Image 1 (cartoon, rainbow, N blue to C red):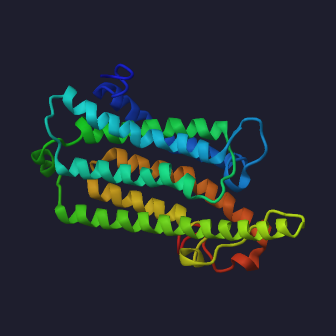
Image 2: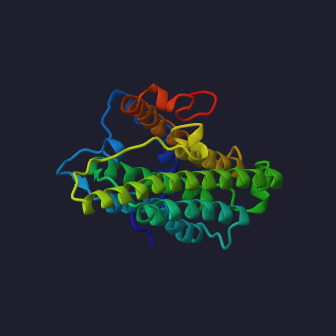
Image 3: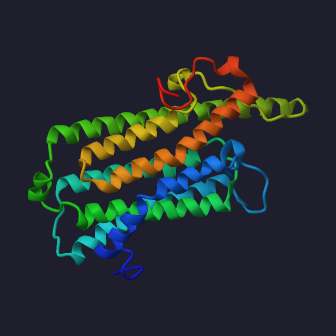
Length: 285
C-alpha cells in the first residue's frame, strides 16, 4: 500500500527525478556560508519557535530509517521481487543501525540538549525523508536486485568487507567522540549541582574537549561520520549513487558548521587553547 501514490514508495520515474535534484543539495547546504545563524547546539538562541532539544532531535532524525524500512517492505513486492540479495539487506541494516543510535538512543543519552529552532527541525525532516527514499528505493528495487546484477556492476566481496570495516570504524569513532562530549556535560551538571547546593550563582561553562580524537581535532564526531558513510559507499560500490550523494550532502552541510564552530572555539578560548588541533580534517584543516 502506498502512503503517497507514486512517492511513498516512489515510482522509478519519481525516484529518478528525486535523484536528479538530490545531486544539487550541496548548493543548498553551502548556503550556510552566507549566514552565521544556526538554530541548534552552541549557537541555539531563545525563540518562541524553538522545540525542546530531545523531542526535536528524535522527531527530525527518525523519519530517515522509518522511510527506508517502509520502502524495503513494500517496493520489492510491487516489482515482483520475492527476495533481495544479501548485499541489499546488509546495506539496509547498516543504515538502520546508524539511525537507531543517532535518532533513538542519542537524544536520550545526552545529559542535556539545547533547543532546536523549528526551521532546522523541518529542514532536517525533509532531508531524512529524501535521503531514506533515495537509498531505500535503490536497495529495494532500482539498484541490483539479483546476484547476477551485483556481479555485472563489478561486485567484490573484498571491497564489501573493506567498506564494512571503514563503516564500523567511523561508527565507533563517532560514538566515542559523542561520549566524550557527554562526559563533559555530565561533569558540568555535577559542578552546577554543587554550586546550586551552596547557593551560588550558576554560569554556563564550556571547555575544549581533550580526550580521544579531540586531542587532534575539534570536530572528530563530524569527521568520523564522513568516514562511516565513505565506508558505506565503498561497500555498495561506485554504482551506489544514493550513498555517494549522501556522503557529499553531509560533507557540504556539515563543513560550514564545523568552520563556524572552529571560530567559536577560537573566540571563546583563544588561539593557545586550541593550538595544534585541526578543525575537522586531519592534516588539512
